[in-house]
Length: 510
Image (tube, rainbow, N blue to C red):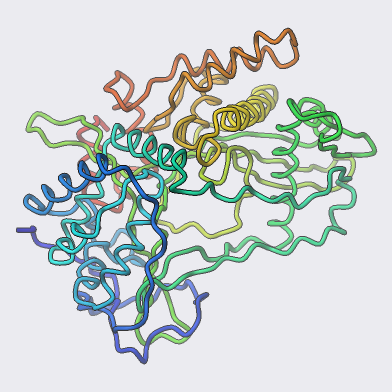
């Protein structure tokens, strides 16, 4: 039997009559406070169609079935239970799942939730287990606790499904800049802001993103500079006629080194920081009944990682899966020559590819937290960006050569691995957890480049190779796992949303 489910005293009820359902897919994001907390009782029936799910090899499905069945038998207090008064604009996942169980739409909505939560692992809960979970929703949260080894195996299974033609590759990112672009013409560029959209998966329950408070002009600069870095990264192995060219203050650049030097010569400040926050796989939000326009509260639903590290009583540290990114800041100053380029770009490996992505397009819920390393400036910052560019090209080439799913995501690493490699190469210390890279794939690609007789970029390739060799895989126990799992927690003590994270900090020695 499940243990008692504690509700967030400051979270509003997420139930209500059909008349209170939002009529728009892009509601307001301002949470409403409630002085009378209520436990959800379900959602109003309505039409809902489950999305298409990746197919997974039966052997892996059986393993997951057994794990979920065990969780149904032994489910206790959920690791997703929220601590009271920490984040008032939230409602707990166990309460949402209980509401789903009381709704005729619960099965379809839960299926969509599982797709969002498990798309990074390649592991899907089969329909017969989902039917059991509907009778005991809190057990589902226990089933969504995975080990790094299970994550690694799930991603391998997803790649196997791709090879067998059962799943399709995600669509590649589209370029918005021409092959040759002068940054002096940035103001003339017609580049609408990407839409931030929410999709309703059950009455009053949404998944997706809402727009950040950044201005359209800021988002535009972030998008342009991210694509400039991304396409310069690819030039290292691009055919001469396919190389991207960016002009700054009348000088054309086709390499990352040249462009970074151009920024420095023009008086721009380039700095780098390594950040960690919770990976918001599900991106869930619930509408507050009776609010017009609909007001939303966040539903914290990260994937939980079982570290295998226990205390003297055998209690295991379970931490929310972290998302890592290297932040790159380009700032103009009073003596800067040329256009005022003030942009922030993020570097990491994701299902949408490896490389540079614009910052501040979508809002980030407060409960995700954020932990940041000391800022790197000068030569160290330039080195970090150069290595990130080189790593981007290495990963993309290896993925194409081996025909890997999602540009090699998972096999060649996840967000944590890509950032850890650069941080290790520049500072000699990585703080990310978990790390899942299959070293042999990228080491083979790096060795191929170091043996091709072309000395261009060799210093960077050697630095990447050394860093990869120094980093462990968390699919196996290793001495640095506890330290990195602790350092990856994106909240200071006393700010954790979950009791399970408070317990994990103690177990990990924090």
